[in-house]
Amino acid sequence: MAQREFTGRHALMVFVGAFGIIIGVNIALAYNAIRTFPGLEVHNSYVASQEFNTRRAAQEALGWTVDVKHQGGLVIMAITDDAGQPVRVASMQASIGRATERQDDFLPAFEFDGMAYVAPAELRPGKWDLRLQALADDGTEFTQRLVFYVAG
Image (cartoon, rainbow, N blue to C red; front, side, top):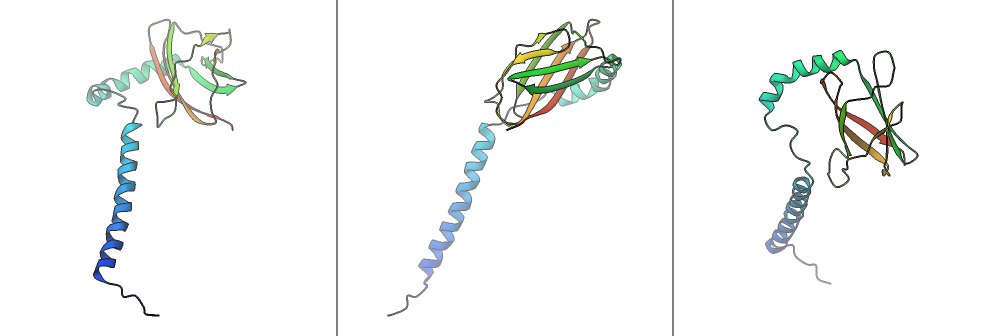
C-alpha cells in the first residue's frame, strides 16, 4: 500500500475546518447572549448614583427585613419590621424571574394573609430572583432584589 502524502491542500482544509468550528461556536454564543439579555437596570446611572445614599438611608430607617421562599406551589414573602412584626405595605410591585433570561419572568399576585404575602407559583428548580418595590405608609420607597432557590 502506498502512503498518502500530507499536502498543502490538506493543511488548508484542517486550518479552515478548525477555525470554522471556532467562529461558528462564537457566533452561536454571541447570538444567544444578545437574544436573552434582560436589559438595563437604570436609564441614567449617574443620576441614579446621586440619589442612592438618600434612598438607602430612608429605606434602612424603615428597619424592614424581607424573606422569600417557595413552598407547596406558593411563593411566600415575609416583610417584618425591626421588632419582628409583619409589615403590611401601602402598595407593592413585584416580579419573579431568572437572572439571565426573561422568558420565565412573571408578576405574582401577592395577597397579605396577616403574616406574609403569598402568591401561587409553579417554579422550576433552580435560582430565582424576586424584585420588590414597595411603598411604606409614610411614602418611603423600599426596593430590594432577593435571590431564592427552588429545590429539584
